[in-house]
Amino acid sequence: LLNLSMLSQVGVILFMFVVGMELDTRMLRQKAQTAILVSHTSIFLPFLLGLASSLFLFKNYSGTSTHFLPFALFMGISMSITAFPVLARIIQDRGLTGTQLGNTAITCAAVDDITAWCSLAFIVAIAKSQTLAGSFLTVLLSLVIVVVVFGLVRPALQRMSDTLPDPAQPGKGPVMAALLVVFLCALATEAAGIHALFGAFIAGVAMPKSPEFRHFVRERLEYFSTLFLLPIFFAFTGLRTHLGLLEGGTDWLVCGYLLLIAVGGKLGGSALAARFTGVSWRESLALGALMNTRGLMELIALNLGLDLGVLSPKIFAMLVLMALITTFSTGPIVSWLGYGQGLRSKSPA
Image (cartoon, rainbow, N blue to C red):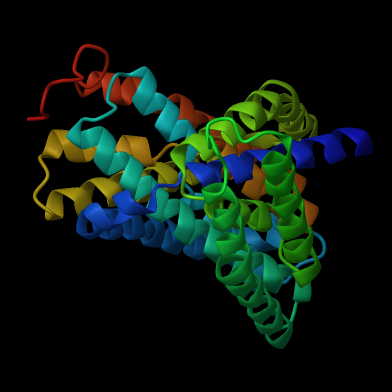
């Protein structure tokens, strides 16, 4: 199991690096108003519901080595995450790329991703330090890492990219430099007291702006991580998910309740916020369904909570079920609302 854990962590680190590279900050600026309102509502409302739920869940479902605050914060963030990469794949598979709905969903998910991962970094810092002073020190060290990466490392990588004769074929040296930055950033954030995943994500965002260079690096890492290493992570997560721990009607009622507030907070909150900005009800509900996609990002966060002893194996199993159900239901809901293949050129009503 230890070997599986190590391989799965490498896979997730490379995956988060690719996610960081795919983040389009220009799109965030273009659709800032709708994206910020929808994404933050889709975080804030389910986060509040998760916090409120922890009041009666803490006694029976928290981990053995945690206090109330880390547990409550983890419950809040587990309700709030949107899986940006999975959502992007759903949009692509259903022919929604380039449509108003597709562009808005991608932008909202990108803002959601940044906010949720920054929040999760702070929560992990609190859970690891167990003291407020220790958590602030961890956050301060993390900010120093971000400043160094974007103030020194990113300009150096950009200069390296600018000197390449053909960014689409950079050769082994620049790719090795990019990988070195990934693992050094991952090591730095792990040493600072959060998690290696956050360093990998920061490294991805800090890569040179050249689309050709990013495509070259992403193409080579994505196949290896998604086809070989990420399945190991899913297998590792499956081995840790013990549905047999859910005994009796009470546990299954709690499981159903968690699913209800996850969908109500995320889908409902996103839809209401989108409607408030003037989007039609049909498109608002479709956007809410897309934002309700949790997928791999949720599983990564849940594994963090289990590793830190914040979540018990029982509630971990419940939240894994919630993540799978909300993710698998996204496609059918979007299709039921009339969005999918063949609607690429249509404007939503």
